Length: 296
Image (cartoon, rainbow, N blue to C red; front, side, top):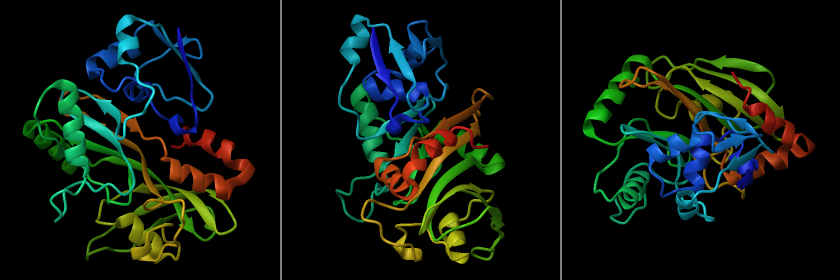
């Protein structure tokens, strides 16, 4: 029997995503079949592929020859959070751009993700972004496996939007909750937020963008005098621990246009973001992490 204990790096990761991390060469169908089988249990109870893991949870997997052969001790550079025949959802690291820039050899999410799947599956396909994150922002991002899937999911996002929850660390102490409605680019824009914790000089905030304007969250928090930490472009303070902005796409929900089912994906916080939370929260670090899975 294989046994794993959930650490801060996997807190709020779903079971399917955890299996992709430890079995990076396994097909999505094998991962989903394994997650829903009696061979995988969480805290000695049956679980589903979408089950959200929490700190100190214990995952047990019945050891088989195939599972043992697929098991890897080194985590992949790019984590898969969800995958089916239509899309793949990656946990984008901070500092990784979505597309290739002017430099020919620029490392980017589309190329890295395409190579990862092609190496695993023996194909030569090219992934297509369904939604996008700024270079310095981390978290869940959806890529389509074909032009047909890109069109379907693109229409879905245009019609119904993408229900998203971000986590941000902002400069200064920010009390309570509120709504920012400063227009951007001549268009209405709305961002709702709730403060989760105040440190001496920074606050951890849950952010709910109602509209989807370019750089909306970054500009809105700048407008109220609490820029995102690490976001130098918009006045954020520099934190040595951060590789990008302290802005993370933590949870995304969409109605799958092919199945009609709701797909909700959680993206665990990157290591540098966790370190900043730990530094500002002190003894409250663990309770804060534990409360993230209960955010509305």
